[in-house]
Length: 347
Ligand code: MRU
Image 1 (tube, rainbow, N blue to C red):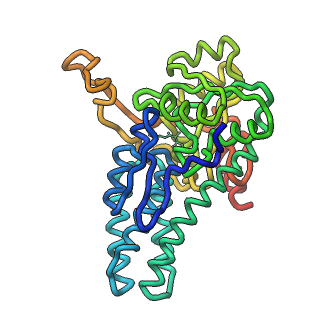
Image 2: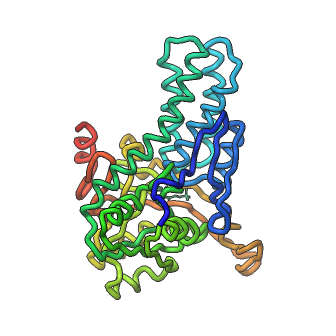
Image 3: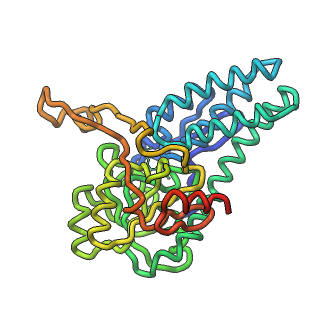
């Protein structure tokens, strides 16, 4: 069994940002080295790095590259450089709030520091490296708080990839599973394929099988069938943005939540506090529309009839009343709703 802590999707190494190339998994585990923030922006856009917490930290490290290379002599000029890079990084993917959160955390350092530009630049690089470490620590806490929700011999269904690859390490939805396994529980996982980018089949199954955790893949449209057969005990998914009326996550999550409720199967969302965006509601979040080629073609071969349109939203919205609990790095919020979450965040 490999070490659960080994896989790191985002790293700072000698003035470069090193990313696991998630477009090549499961066939190869290779890395892409980003020298500039534009390389990082391109990696986010093309999904070399993906998953809400991972793109948040990657974007922060993109700004650390700006700091590392900047020759700006005044704080004002340096801030301009940072803000220009931040707006380009923010434009890569619109739905996951962690992306803008990661950028804001870095800009805050620059704005609040009274030191000279050299000191500020050093602080920024240090902060980005710290954010990567904090992400792993937050996920370990999600594992600790989520573990009691899983019983020995449970079969847990998860959608998309909310594992080590979607974060810096350890994962969010996969964290309670990993912690349960470490404690000796026998947990089996069903990973739904996650059309069209197949994050469940390619990434979740890759990670779990590497860690020796039993995993089987089903297509997304088999979920209801297996729930009806009694083969799913719990569902845990990640989140891209938790707003004041519910959760944005990978397309298919909403259907999964409805199906879980019908079959009385607990439906859990696992996410760090940095995924909460309680100033917004579902009405004002942009759901990323991706190229329809992701649907129409498989391995560069068209599978749909010519001249037929497709629609390809990458995320959907699940209202809180379908969510049994949110597992965070500060604890579990049962039957989540806006006021309860606000009180919880103040703890
Ligand atoms: O399009 P992706 O692969 O970036 O979507 C990822 C998801 O929807 C994940 O479930 C979410 O980011 C949570 S990751 C811990």
